[in-house]
Image (tube, rainbow, N blue to C red; front, side):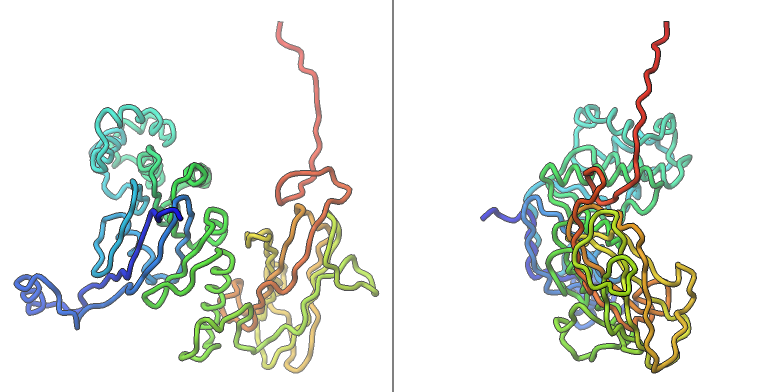
Length: 415
């Protein structure tokens, strides 16, 4: 078996929870902090990462994601345990943090390279590529203090990715900047991954985690709560958030008991069915052709008045990637207007299921806001599974079936 490129064994990180003159003097003269006054952010974290894996780290704020990445990048040390990395590391943590405002982008690029052990000759060889990728024009030779935050991120990202590392660490580094450069940066990260680099990636964007990563780790309560397929880990994460938000589970309960359904039960979906075109005799349909009409029909009960009750649905492909999501609030219903004790049928009508061939599933949720983690009444993951096959449309590649035509017009060459 291939040796891991990253090995983390029983790693913990703690900070002093007591301050003041006495605590400071004790730390200075003893060289250590009183173990009884430590606040542990992470403890007992153990996992390996194989070469070429793309691992997403998820968890609520304060779960220790950034702390773990800083230890891996070498900018922070572990309080206990052992971290071994076999290969070169490039970390995109706080882009541009070390840039000197009075130096130009080019000068800062040289300094950043030298700080990571690159020679002047090595930086000379890639400086043109850095300048071209950053796309800041003449600003590259102007002081960084004249840059916008987005321009600074462009240069910093171009410098940090000028050389392909064995391990690439990314911590929400691309949340600043315009959409164009974000797409360009993600394309470079994907290229590194495809070329065999190992990726550790922190993001609050589930789509990015599912797209870039083939494995996900959920951090919480000081350790690793779940490790596995990104779609499964994200579903568990959402169920965990919902359960905690509404105290739906026993505080002493086992996290492993959380399954595909969660919520406080104030409202509940009795049935979820995917039907064909509107027809009194319509029955559940497990297979559709590209462009065929479909209806998602959901029957709901409520147990108490719930102003603002919202029903949402999300279609995902077999990898768990979000294809399409919508809810009743966004379609103009501020609440579904249900009376306790009465059952109501809600239909999402899809006149054209314009998605690519393949297997999909639909997750649904009842909640009191625009997002399912707020006031979660009933969340049901993978409530419906269906398949889409070729229809009358010309075969195409991708997940979206867009109407398209082509015109070919001869153009006379200039004399």
